[in-house]
Image (tube, rainbow, N blue to C red; front, top):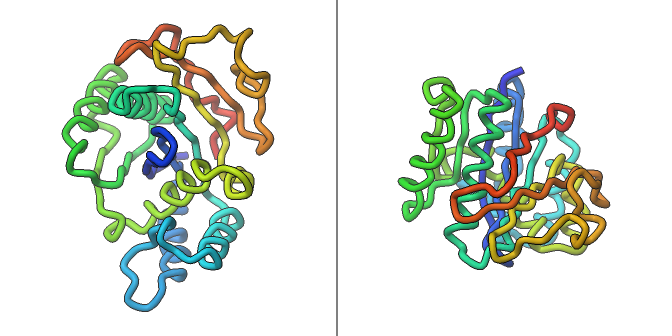
Length: 227
């Protein structure tokens, strides 16, 4: 089964990336479902700016419509925002290669588009898939499915009931550790040990980075956690 991966971020409490994998066969159906939630004259859904009742309605639809599997790349332990972002983008590219996704779509941010492309292209070339997996930066107004990672990232970063309610969509949480935050597994809280399971049922994996370099072997997205 081939997937497209839709990606957005949150910087509300440190950097994290949300990536929603959607089977290619479900893309058109989900675009229609999300379009049906648009208000009159609304060109995109921006979850943070929606009223609470609308947020609840949108989240209920996303968690019940089917065909969505999200991964959180949590770089909130990085003190350096840019290093955290680069680590998350690198791991995203590696997971996309592992899945042999057909396309990665990131919400466009002109300040990081060039850097994102450099990192992703390098990782895909290493996997010899740079001519197989497409990479696009799009405005949310031009790609409705970017509303999915937008909602997932916001809810997860918000915490509390919002995080709890978005967890049915989240299949894995990958914690990226900066060099200054290195801890041995024995000193991590029990719910953050590699391979442990969070309250929402998403598997957790801890990956340690020092800048662009990993300090321990890459752990790929388990096939068992794919949709």
